[in-house]
Image 1 (cartoon, helix red, strand yellow):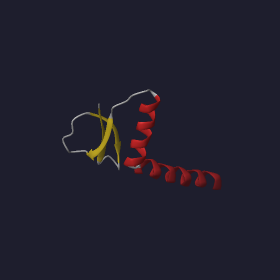
Image 2 (cartoon, helix red, strand yellow):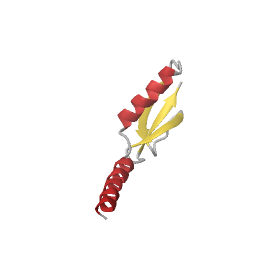
Image 3 (cartoon, helix red, strand yellow):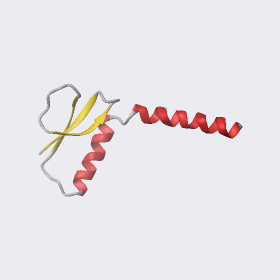
Image 4 (cartoon, one colour):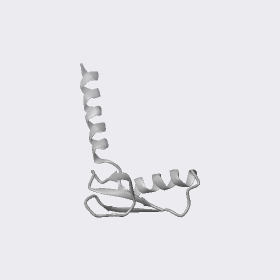
Length: 73
């Protein structure tokens, strides 16, 4: 029974960490690494508010869904 309670406690902590999401700068850096690895050049990644009008393609969501990362070439 102690193991079950410990497992439930750990899972609830892990769930909280996933709900927080990644920081925008961290996610932007990860996306940039993936684009660079594919040989993409001449692009920009911009962090904007979710409700703001931005030109480009949304490639990520961060800060609990309040901001997005927009890709433009």
